[in-house]
Amino acid sequence: MGQQQLLLVILGILIVGIAISAALGLFGAEEVEQNKEAMRHDILNISIYAKRYYLRPVTMGGGSRSFVGFTIPTKLLSTANGSYSVSVATKTDVTFVGISANHPANTITVVLNDRGKLTNYTYTGDFQ
Picture 1 (tube, rainbow, N blue to C red):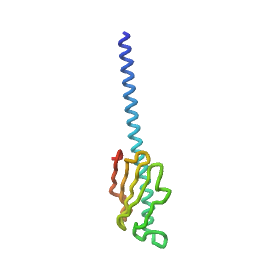
Picture 2: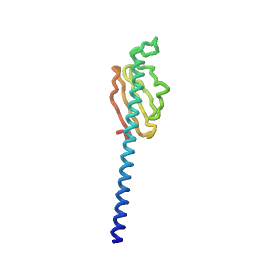
Picture 3: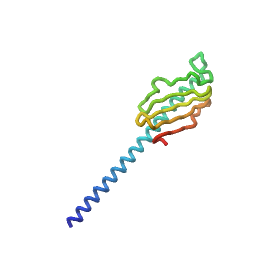
Picture 4: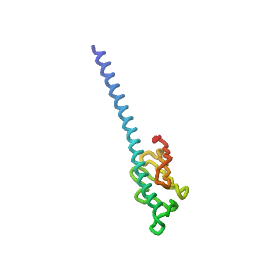
């Protein structure tokens, strides 16, 4: 009877250990997904500033139907979610790159076109 009880205790400890391990794995995956969504939201906010710049005339501090000269507002360059940069490829397209603050290998690259649509999402690292 003593060996059976010892075997059941060991089996119970193993089951609890596996359950804890699985829970930690799920928690880590959820953290990555939340960071990805938060960064997508930050990029959406930045794209609103870019579109506003695109539509405004030069006399009002805009680009007059061009993204050339657009810069990300200082308060949005780096957030708790990540850091962001902008690259103006043409007058009608601008590319945003976001690097995760939690895991720098995780990045998001997205293009904003002249119609105000975010396209060509590219993910690296755990964001894939």
